[in-house]
Image (cartoon, rainbow, N blue to C red; front, side):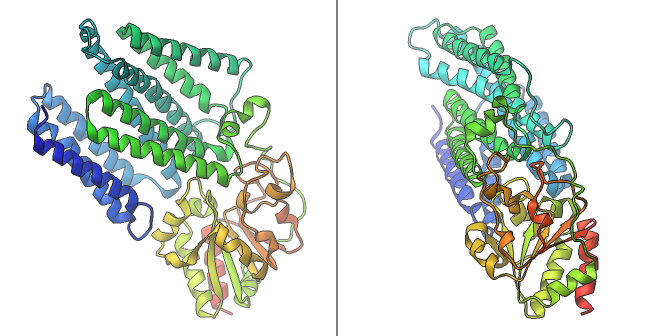
Length: 463
């Protein structure tokens, strides 16, 4: 029987997780929400040491110390541009851990199944689910990490017969899950885990381009569901609540991201199997464009009444957010109205740009979401696109068959003048040309974003 104080503590932790998630929904409360969630997690991990007679305590403490050290070092060293792949890696570790715990629990449950009524079929089903889906999440997350970290190609990886292999693995997984319920054996659990790893690989390999972050969110939901199922198996309310929160929020985030891309989740996962791709050719164009130096662009910005900034992943790569903020402050001081237009999938994950700009002390009031600012572009003198491409590509509205067709975009093409800051003429993450680059109203400023913004800032100050 679990002591009353433990039940009350776990209840407080569960409520804290809910409050933490609520806090993370807004920039003003995100920090305190994160702290509340972290403290609740530490308390939930510590409680078993005070009321259970644990075996191998030293090994457990060593594992906790190693995990803590790895997490702290990783969090301190990770760059903002690498945050999505770090999320993927941590998520995969969570799914893999849930699968391993479920395998160990299955080993403990097998002898009890010989006693009538000792183990319910639902407990065995939850165990099989945790093993299979946790393994899928682990393998899939490792692949997404490798793609975003450029350890492997980010293009879709397919081979003849992939759908058949995937289908057979899925059918075998269902069959072994049923076997786990009707006649559990440890070798069945191990094979189930291996099949889960195979399905995770085959699920993510065909995904490419801008869809990889969406798959990270989906796998995050998978991990949450496995943790919730594991909480049921272990009779742990905290795991059940925390896993349900992660599973539900991950599912909603996946749907929101898919809608922001104008795609269905099924198309994102299996589009490449039908010959589609989220990547184009990815070849730099040699078509003529109008380019200018920092002084010319400074004149456009310095005498504009209305300017909208469109930040993208290139801004994060160049770590130019502080210089951009200084430029905006100078423009505002000159009487120019300036806002940042934030696309839902700017960067590589939702909120990526918000966090990046908040790090540079950009006032949150200047960050305007796509739905609110799209009507403003037609009244804008200059749009400054810094390291973004696909989120302002008109092909999303005008070119059926384009990888990004149907994706809602920022209406930068409606402005009087557009300035693109780019390193080269290479296309964006979707790998297709942006016709806006060749529009007579568009000027390109080539170079590293941080260096170019520094020169642009000095030129504006000199006006």
